Image (cartoon, rainbow, N blue to C red; front, side, top):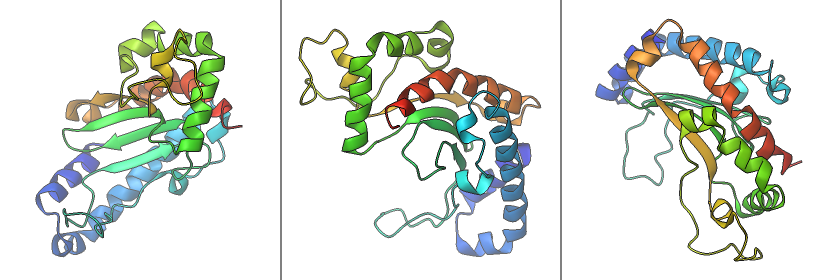
Length: 216
């Protein structure tokens, strides 16, 4: 991934259409390389989570063009490559495996980020109904060591329809059910980075499967 990171560093400095068009062949090379990486990740993830086995890289990878219609930032291109490997692909609101390559800001993530109200209610409901199973997943030593405690924006009080005396009330106050872990540029450039990514994604399997059961 060293060449991908090099391209993105250049793009951070020259984020304009003139430079991009002059270097489109370089972009196409790195885009193709990234899609090959994603294809290998899909294949490896499918060995422990068959729900993603039908996906292609194009189902999972994002366009590099930014939507600048409603943004004060008019730079035309994203400064990262991203892929969300999840049942239904990148546009689906399901738990999955996210790879983000960006100079000085790369990460691996999983779960469901910013779900709409109907999905959020279903996630809270399954956690309310099966709190022990969920706690065992998020408090597993390997999971906590990699991702830390479940964190993010929360309601100040119990969600509507849930009892205030629920033992694990804090867990159903969350507005997101996602976790992440950062990667350094040295990590991204290391020869065994794909193996490391798969090891991290394995730790997300039970978390994603639990969340996705709520959506069946």
